[in-house]
Image 1 (spheres, rainbow, N blue to C red):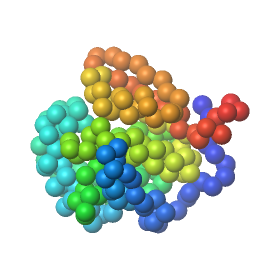
Image 2 (image 1 turned 30 degrees about the horizontal axis):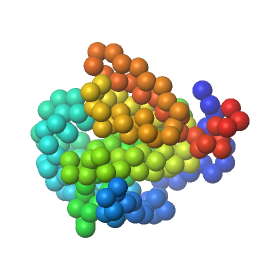
Image 3 (image 1 turned 135 degrees about the horizontal axis):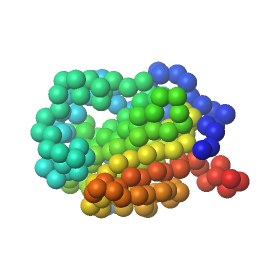
Image 4 (image 1 turned 90 degrees about the vertical axis):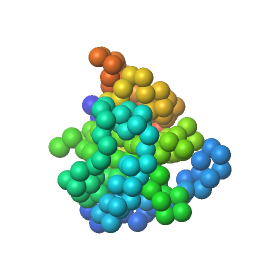
Length: 190
């Protein structure tokens, strides 16, 4: 396992305005991306309600019709260091969310993202993964792990085309993915 980077490690939990920006979909739509805030709770609930049954099932491995108040609070209240989430908006409406949660005391984090059905396969997931990886690496995380259904070709495609070195195994219908997220110039010497 690699040691976490020793320079430029972010240790503050203040709102990271520098992570805000814009992404462009493969069909040319420009969308706003920024770190989540606790005030995004109503938008997150609305986003979840508009997802297809298939998207919800692939994300949660079961039918999950509504987010509970406890889940919403957990998902929207992050420390921006060990737990970070980015949201993507289209004219103020939340259309995607990506997040990582660090395993305590390690340089590894679980990563997950969900994109509204109409924007799937438009490059949003890949760009969320790239932005999350950059932010995570700045915060001392070197490895992302993810569990996804082995037939979730959209998510597996994002990982496969991410450019990150990865390991993948499958058991019981679940794909276990490990991504090394160090920038290329950091891994060239290893």
